Image (cartoon, rainbow over all chains, first blue to last red):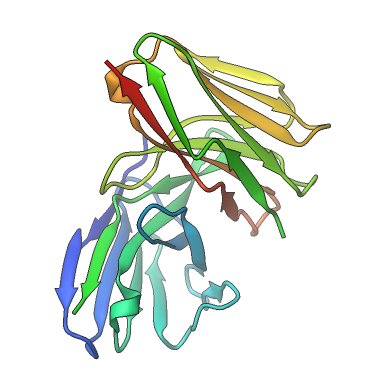
Length: 117
Length: 114
């Protein structure tokens, strides 16, 4: 199946710093990628939909100036958490939309655990 | 928007027995229903999915059923094994071109008792 990678797998940073997380589709091109956030023992919550070459679409309640998304190529989307604070600590997961046969399917990355001190 | 409810939140099953997890959705326009398995510290992995033009799909020990009239779908795992222990999420999606957003259920923590 299609493979999606994330880097880094975990990161610890100080409050007030910015952190960039990369999401790559390794063996397919993805015009659409999604970014999710998952708090401990909770479900995945969609943060934004990232389309290659255009601005991301953010879900209600997600601050676009705090969570900057750049989808500069068909295989790479980045999420930058700006001025991170402890409440931003979470598990961030991306997915990429790929064509399987004649239908689209979301392939998920392994996630990035962010801890803000 | 879509709302997906999932039950139970936790489930313990003796090894070899069957496990059933149920989900309901609210948006009748949803037509794609995947199930994901998530192990600790990892991203979700698709284990089976069903589209609205079929009522049941089976893949070895795993099966999914869909009742569009009642707006519910279920995951069935037979002959459970310890490696089936994980958190399982259902999801629903309205596959309109350019709007393929998944709405996830709240998850079920499945524990297989050896």
